[in-house]
Image 1 (tube, rainbow, N blue to C red):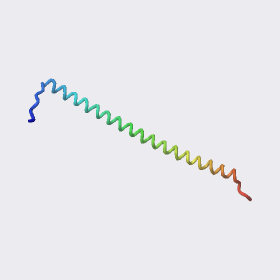
Image 2: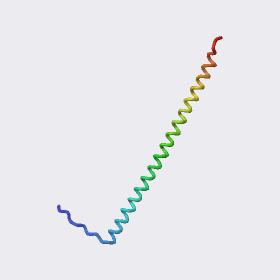
Image 3: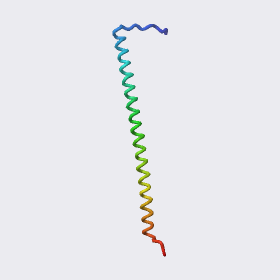
Image 4: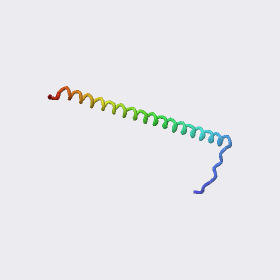
Length: 75
């Protein structure tokens, strides 16, 4: 099959170009939204890691206190 030229009315051609431009804008908007979501997720992950580290530190301190109270040193 040969590549035959496709003829489109000028007003339809302009409509198609406008539609393609609108689609590209929507794609750019979606990319921006995904970047923002990714940034928020990264910040959330960082906060969760900090909370986990803090909780682990508190747990160590409580374990130390519990051990110290359960087994007092002999003089």
